[in-house]
Length: 282
Image (cartoon, rainbow, N blue to C red):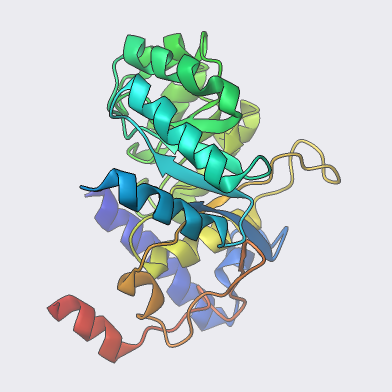
């Protein structure tokens, strides 16, 4: 239900923007930036990890981004092996983010963190199941790595509970699930009031990516306007994705490790009906 409401909210703002000849970012308060830094997602688990994992990492390395995210969560020892390989392939200057997809209990997550902390991990995504709020609070109190979560939470109320418990370092609302752009703005305000970073989760299609671009572009610089140590980032899957790359007549541009904000009315993108029909029938 919340995914449907999220889609309706995004569609309504897109329609209003087109009626008024305004980009959605201006309906959200105006742009603070027009280049949206990304981190590249990849490094997935496959049936042949010895062969596939280094190849995926090389693809991430040559993508030109400053930060990449890889999958872990098969066990603390395996986590260290994967992170060690990633650091060797990517080098010391690329930031590494890890994602366990909620696969651990508290003790397993803490052991995993301790095994990989010396590799300079930017953040550890979803170490625990998403609704384990108390577990996140206990883990963050002892974690040697910043914790990120939120892609499976709904409305600002879930995020308020998480933030009130001081259970997270980076919140990750998914605009296609949490309630849409207006709910995203409420979550962003909560994060700012709790002095917590925000990086929206983006997965699936190009509409969600376009919405995330306008959302991140609208966020004010915080806490200082001239020395932003950690800017808000957008997740960008470097894998082949027809729902992102082919459904638009003109895809969202990525230049020098950042998405370029579409500045035409609405979300700034136009669907290709033939491509959409092809994807729906595939």
